[in-house]
Length: 120
Image 1 (tube, rainbow, N blue to C red):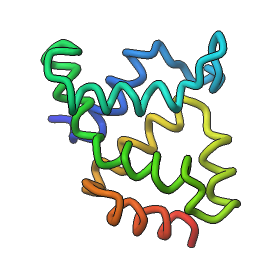
Image 2 (cartoon, helix red, strand yellow):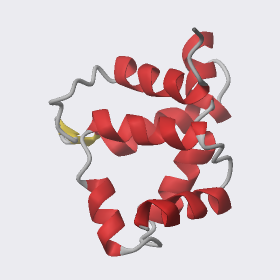
Image 3 (cartoon, rainbow, N blue to C red):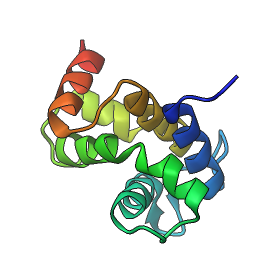
């Protein structure tokens, strides 16, 4: 069975950042949520930055990363939802980005609808 784009994104993020179920959000002063979204941005905007396989998997999450940056990091979602997402472990956050990719979040407008559905 073939993995969906979101499943490949989730698995790649977890592998690339050596994330396990007990990994904390901050590692040596680095915010893994921000590091993950940055890696996705690099994969989509800087061809050759990652290996071809990693780049293909990460680039699928570009819309999800944009939506997260605008709506969660930009304080545009309800405080309760923002707190819920910010409390996620990197393992859970990678799964959220993969879920967003599978939900076809390709821009911030679709991200806004996705987050509204999470808040309901």
